[in-house]
Image 1 (cartoon, rainbow, N blue to C red):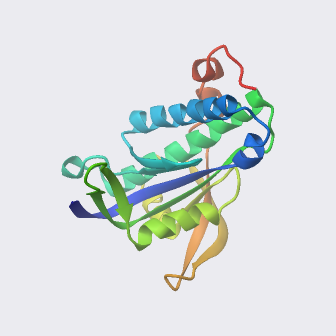
Image 2 (image 1 turned 180 degrees about the vertical axis):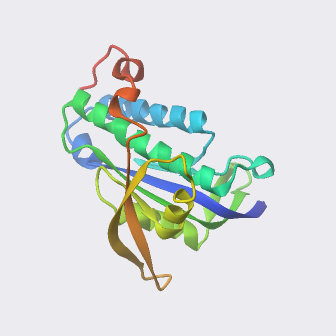
Image 3 (image 1 turned 45 degrees about the horizontal axis):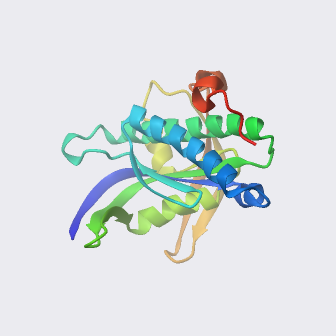
Length: 212
């Protein structure tokens, strides 16, 4: 077992809203093809922004801003890159929603910055995973958010506000109560003009084949 503590890591939880409804009545091939195309685009953005995809579970996609502990970017830059990914994910699913003609499909995304435990677990089948209260808070930012929006915690908001080059708008969301931790976390919706829908070309993303 390998385990370490990582400070001020920005974590993203993303969930596909409407995925169960979309899957109902579809052929397995159609569902897997749509999910594969979607996640492949998310993976490309992770690589472009030098982020680490921790795992996917079903239609949930989890990312953290820390890629290399020995060569870390400033905390606020990691936070900014994660939020850039989140905004890009919204853009991508907007395009997919039009292509499959399913208006209910969307993304609900939560982002939080905090201290985590990370490590490789297992023996025969191993994987890296993350733990700790701040991982739970990041997850609650997602579940306490809204479809089509990026919800960030107070901690992430404060890091974003230290960057002069960003162009975010921050709209206050309701405080999110996390009963198991006994805390209430302020949260905000993030908007940006930095990544526009036309920045991701539909033909390059999905190819010539339309998903049904």
